[in-house]
Length: 157
Length: 291
Ligand code: FES
Ligand code: FES
Image (cartoon, rainbow over all chains, first blue to last red; front, side, top):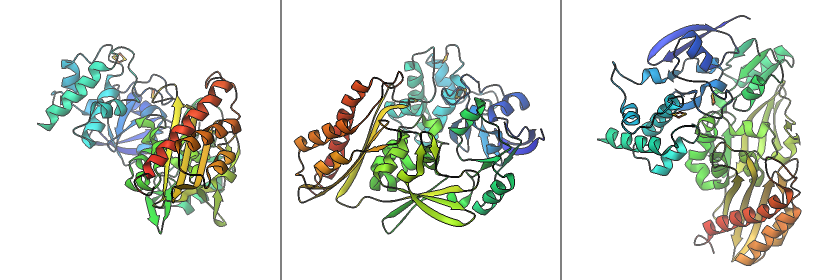
């Protein structure tokens, strides 16, 4: 199958990759660019472990054809920390014990970032709604929601 | 799954690609319905034609009371649009109940219509708004009432190998009209509706001047509860008349037993509850404004 050239910004850097026309963005990120933070679980848009930000909006990369990222900006969890310094949302997840097995965490953190970028002072309900496409089988969500609210407060300061 | 992926920048270009592939190309907008189906290996095609970047398919506009939603507009955009929240509340609420935030950021309202599912949330709201679907083909543009677009479960009358749904049109609510959406599902996110209902009401001089009530999935396509609507027409605005209308809607509904969605008996009862809630909600939105 003839590959197609895909040019996109990934974590602030322009990259061009030759991709299978039918490849999903998740596969390109993981297998071509070796960014393995985004995870595949259901593979059909039901769980959010594969979430990345596309032009700032959280999407399920497992059901997003890679070519949809053409000339757009992709942010993965690898692009969130700056020179080894965790992002305040990541710090809050650690501080609040919002990570257990960690499989859902990259998607959760990115969904939270998309929310806080748009709404710096969300209510608890708004946090719950924003994270409602991200399933966690370990934590019971309470600590995750606490972490996001506390990160929001910190980012506002 | 497909050998080529193209991102045309105009409708004409997209139509040309469809024609060149003679039925072996398919349109994709958000892809939230299509891609999981394709991944499940249901069918093979040669080319995906992505219409999500076409300029003319973006945006929500109002012109003299008519609202136009471009085919590339997502559920998230519709749900957060002030125009839609104020003038087509039922659609904003329906769009907000689809899938999850991640799905709503990509899936389009037009795609929800083309999928022709018996209870697509946004589509059910568009039935209540009596929307028309704008379809563009080689021979120009036509407008089709949404109810005529549904052929069967999961099959629309759009010839997806030769034409493109380019927009959705409907009339925004006027001062004496209001609308509401209600839904029953196993969870509040990431759950298909066990039932949903969309209503539009108008009040004049303390009476219902008009009521449109749509219920799904209680038939192969969203059901207009005509008897319930008739019962409300010219009736005084009262809680009792709303209860009667909800009962009539339940009687008109033909839900089926479903392992996923619950027994027919239970769901008929729930039609009554949901229709009552939606009518109360829409009516409350008007009271104080006109009554
Ligand atoms: S792996 Fe993408 S949504 Fe589950
Ligand atoms: S921490 Fe294990 S799935 Fe969320």
